[in-house]
Image (cartoon, rainbow, N blue to C red; front, side, top):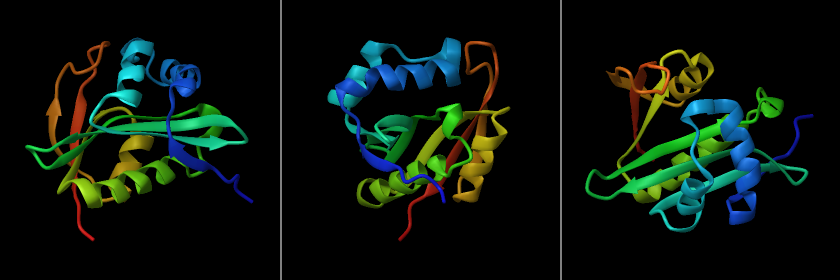
Length: 151
């Protein structure tokens, strides 16, 4: 039986757990504690964590762009200990629920070499719309992907 994750809005006290996941997943491209505090408490958007037995196993931050009628997945990450347990799908499902109320499309950037993430996005209706060269700290490129929001 798969572990049961609780999905809830992030709070400031989650930042140490979020930062641990961020460092593991993104290394030099990681956000700072200050950036996370802003995203959780002040940004126009949503920040959720997936928690299992009081341990944060993953999170997402999604920002609303009202002019573009879009919801941008700003950051999404799963701790390696929780990969393969449908946490990514749980987070994407919540993003889609939010987008149904907030926007006409969901957009994101993903490293061209992050095959598991690309597969998850494609499985959920995202399509590559362009490539941003030299997007990441190490010079890697990013796919720009988007998904229309329909009920």
